[in-house]
Length: 146
Image (tube, rainbow, N blue to C red; front, side):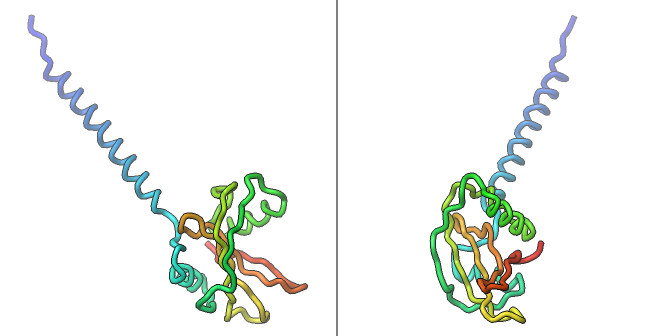
């Protein structure tokens, strides 16, 4: 009686090859995800993003400061996050972190004089923002629409 390992070796080889392929795909997806996001580290990155959203802004920000995103969202932050979700952002991803906030003066918003574009940056990526005015009859809107 002869036992053939030829079929077993082939199945073992295919199983190992499939495992290697799955690991390679997982690695590539993880590596791509690490760089995902909208660049915002440089002033030119932020200006380009705002321009793509349809906003003409002054070249230099009015203010730059650190903003702590709370770990647990109050009703105000829940509402602000809903506004950000309309633009494709989710501040829950940076809950408990400190972001850099850049505020730019918008030059092409019709009907209002002092309108600001605010961007939140975390680890060099744009993670949120809004278009707003502080006037008594003011507003706050998504920075752009998805």
